[in-house]
Length: 211
Image (tube, rainbow, N blue to C red; front, side, top):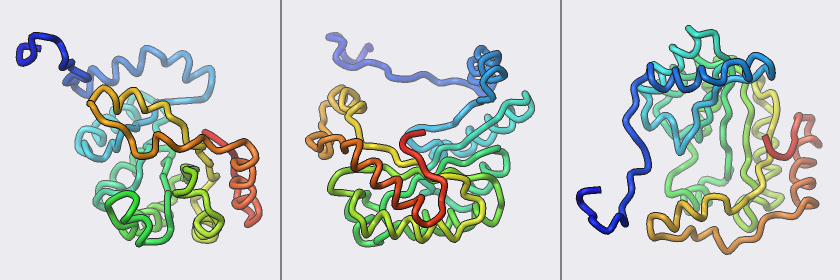
């Protein structure tokens, strides 16, 4: 880059149009058709670029693609519902049920996140709830049982995915000269993952590790 002759700064993305993104997605159309899959709009948080994502979802639907939105739910309710109405599936993250702990760990309240999930449930679009299993942060019995009880009352939730913590993102932190405070944490054992899955199946939910 011109601002850094040594090359220490590198462009990590590029500006794209809806048409350009869709063209890239459609290169793999044969694989979607053979597998029954489709395109998932993820991030980061895709609803930080809500207007662009809404146009992409409309374009994907017009092209006959199965479309999913992967969101943490921390966005205006109108944006969450508008995106969901253009989706076949919503992947929705739930981390912590206790409001104080959620604020401490993420920097924001979970009030809007839970309210948006309730609103989505009323909409009826299929939902997969995704629960990151982070040692010492989200993996205690009280938190997992609280999520299980809350999700059990939702009609549109089709399954719960327990996502074991990993360090795949560590290299990205290093590229920007920082380290994640979670990096020293160990990955949960398979036994711990299995116990977490059982918390959800015990209340009648379909649950599995990963996904």
